[in-house]
Image (cartoon, rainbow, N blue to C red):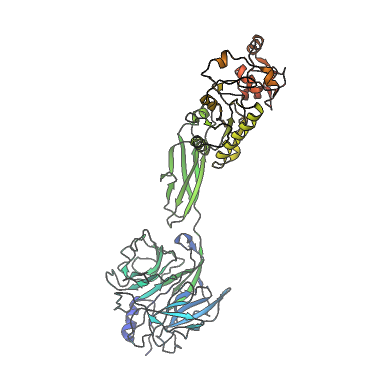
Length: 616
């Protein structure tokens, strides 16, 4: 008997079974070798390429599957007049891939017999192969899959794989086993089927397979769903169906898993006219950036085609940004336009907003992620520039910041000081253009030379604590002032015995902070509000011995303003007296050190006696 039948037409499938009175199992087996592959990588395809005559023939070639090392392409061939079991036998063939094509295909004798044979899966290490179960030795063998293990170059006898409750009565079914051997997708007319064949899943739990679960109405239709393939991340399912319209007899669709359940899927989408034709298209799988499938679009029976996967257009944006009207204002705006990618899109800001247009924003750095229809994501960062800060704005940032204090003769950061320094870190990270000057001080209990070194160490330890937690650590400058800027005015140099309490000396052992906007002079003025000692004798009765101090250093902690100096100040200039530093000039004149440096182009705090400084 000789029958000429369109094997890819579903109705003729039925007629073939009826006339031949033997089972011809329609099976699909796929391996996805690209571990990181997801649906998001597919944008479109190159023009299809018909694999050469080394593989395709006048017979039917379908169900391609690639070995895990990517070198051997397995497929099934039927309607071959030269087949050992006759024209309607289905055999496993293989072809070795080579650069630019494939080698001439040969049969696989290890697993071919007089029944219908096909590979249904290969393990990740290539040592386990899954097959259509045709090895029970009976004409009516169990409809399922078998497993064989490789030892050396030899394969073991295939053994049936038990899938609980799987009972296939129809003549149309297929299997796919993934490389990690924990998922089987089954196509058959089973419990809860909506159409002729539906897709079911069985998963491996504790080394045993579960009873098949129907994939739900989002995947299955009133038509047939066959030839499933799922990617290695198990989030994208490809299959062929005649129940969703399309180009022809059966088209290849894909769907994305949307939840943890195997019944939660996106609406299936057609792969398009590059892959699908007005005829029968199925048996789709992916290896790297190459797609393979079977189609009879150019012949009576199916051949195997390939195409290169082209990435989707990149997600690209343009922004329209309106900066805030002032440093503290929150009237900034951002409008995002998406210029590339596959929509519809979703947007998610780092603060949880999902709007493309944002209002009520202050200055700063913002990030948001765009997700396209396939789940491809891209994260963008934008900066809303803050208007230049005024000194008032900077001072306001320090309203809740207290000076930090040190133990006697120590420069180690105490636990109570860490609280304030952490506040400074937050301010610096929230305002990346701000610079900060740390001014560190001592009491007057040691020599001025020792105290100057100690204050430098305190400035360094304070700065180091902040630097390790902020961006652009070079925004920090620090300076020690020794005992030249006492918070509590209680001289104790030379032979003068201090009458300050321990608590008052503690107030002098401190680091204070001044914020300055980027581009300002590097050293800001450390503002000091003096506190008089609780003992009034420190300021009213104890005399200051300048000669005793000058034997150790030229610095003086107190140079009174004479009547002549006051007249000079009123006239807008200042003549430096012996032993005065720039800071003492600032205290006496009421002009900050920053202003004095700026007006007089000064680069040092040390001044020669007799130097005339302009005050305005």
